[in-house]
Length: 146
Image (cartoon, rainbow, N blue to C red):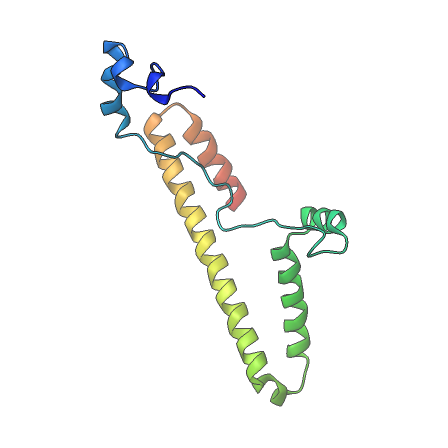
């Protein structure tokens, strides 16, 4: 087995050439780990332990996300609740469900507003460039809004 103290640069700082000895001070400011999450908070864990047909489920989710599936189920259930007798709508489970759907609708509205705000900021940046793109996009938006 090799002696760890006998190894040379880059493992031993005292064996490094003079130009490389300054690097440790530069690297002390660098992050120790680099990662970029994609879809933070999302997990896709379809396997044979939690699905009897994981490939089929993956194909379904690819076509209709869980959010889309739940949204359609919520819409259908809301329609059924509205069609029932008035007294049934006071059931606490249905009240909770309606509150949840209202909260989801508010989240969607907030997200739409945030997207429009980003669009306005992007348009302002294009306007500052004054290269014609702003005018084309402004005109296209006006046409789409009329």
